[in-house]
Length: 144
Image 1 (cartoon, rainbow, N blue to C red):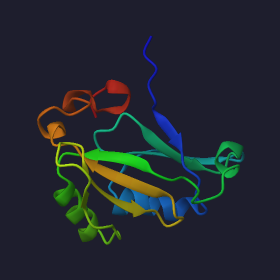
Image 2 (cartoon, rainbow, N blue to C red):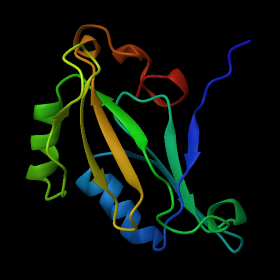
Image 3 (tube, one colour):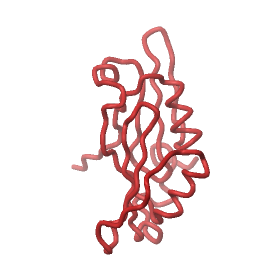
Image 4 (cartoon, rainbow, N blue to C red):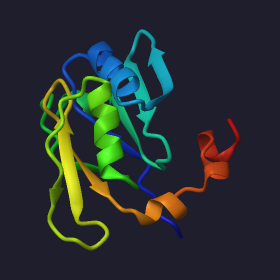
């Protein structure tokens, strides 16, 4: 039995501002933005990730204080290139820190507009062997 982590609820104060940050500044894919008389829920996924973030106004979103999530982690093959991409998109990021010279020991970080914090870890092996193969990256494993 596989148990896959596929969604993390992220507490934010302003849904539209957060969509603009994650989609437009970070480049996350907008999977859906659902609004009806009961809710406003948005799902966004980083390129190559099997796990998405979900923001919204349901109790599971509003029971946590906006900006209270700490240390969510993204993995990239090249920290310097990823950091530069975020700088080019006007995202405030920390300097790169090398905690260990072995693969996986290089990090930088950033925060979203509410103060939720993210660490970005470099794992060079992801360049040759991505965690999710490119052909399996469509929604629910389908192309597209």
